[in-house]
Length: 461
Image 1 (cartoon, rainbow, N blue to C red):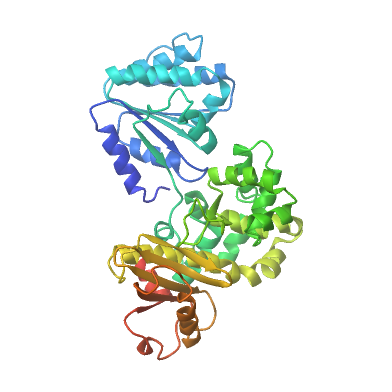
Image 2: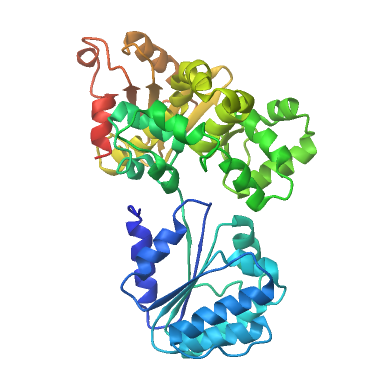
């Protein structure tokens, strides 16, 4: 199942159509759709797709050469090393204009100390004699960023394009999640934007049924997915898992994480940095702060599915083994909407970027994010330096309509935001799952935007 990725496909087409050799690096987390992107791009084009294995170097060499020979419809040549195998690959690339894609390239890298130097020689040779495209793709972000593209890599500086493939946004995921808007938000909160996770759900069934079949079933690939993901990148993932569980349960500052996991602040810094590099967590600072200098940082899990798994599945393993339906009924569903509220804030932030881009807000915002200081916190603040204009937004995933109390509260908190005070224009946005009290819209001036779920759905159409 392939969806969207129009920008990435356009970039690949443009790169391949250039009158020169192209080396394209594609990487990103497992299940993000790298292979489907490659196959969609290669369709109806002269290409060879090779999926590397975790076998020995000799077996991998033989597998690649056999596929190359079959592609050329000729006898398999005799090879003695990776340099021989890669030289044969060079012969294929030098003939006409074609695409060769090697998927899970990190498996090759990990099998041999000479593979990268062999590919360096290949690329240097092809730059003078070929107009083909070589794609190297991998799920191990650490290998792709350090060993393949890093400063010390033999391939450093030789790529002509790279695609760091990201999970779907809510807008893109909405094309797959076939639920009404309220249940679509809840569904996104438990799968995130990973295409394969989204495709596992049967949207003719209720969300609860999908949770039982996928997140809470021992036979589902999602049940052990986070552990598998971490073992792909880390030799000893236990401490990383404890950090992720702590963050998922609301311990978001370094001191809180350290206290919850019994990991000292020194080692913890290294663990957090590694998890950030792997895109599993992100460091967040107030939108008005300078990221590199701010000490008011918190950490959050980057992926909604992982946040759900470490919040509900990992702590309930024993119960899930015995009675998954009771875990769903007694543990998950009573707390689900409180969990979804954080996802709702992210979706509202995405909506504001779209509204700003479409000129539907008063400001043209270059920064949108959370804000907090002391005991004050605002869900979303937007900053437009040029006018200047500040936007203040609250996002309420509650069962009651929003009224004047929230309006006055937001006005008060906006006064605490020390950014271009006295010279800025201001506008306000209220997002509400349950709508707004009667007469609230009429009582506010045109600086206020009130967005219920129906209007939010229209933003993402």
